[in-house]
Length: 71
Image (cartoon, rainbow, N blue to C red):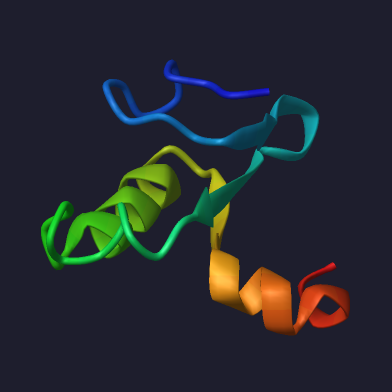
């Protein structure tokens, strides 16, 4: 379930409130420096940490090539 309330206006792709934990699934094209500031992902992680939410980022190539490790 997506959530925009934790670090508004940013969205967390999957947020598990009872664990205070989020997962971002990032496609390589739209999450490249062509579309996102080079600090976008680290800023998002820091904003989550500021409100005691753990956040991990999984890029689509990591999922494609190392799905079992990601799980």
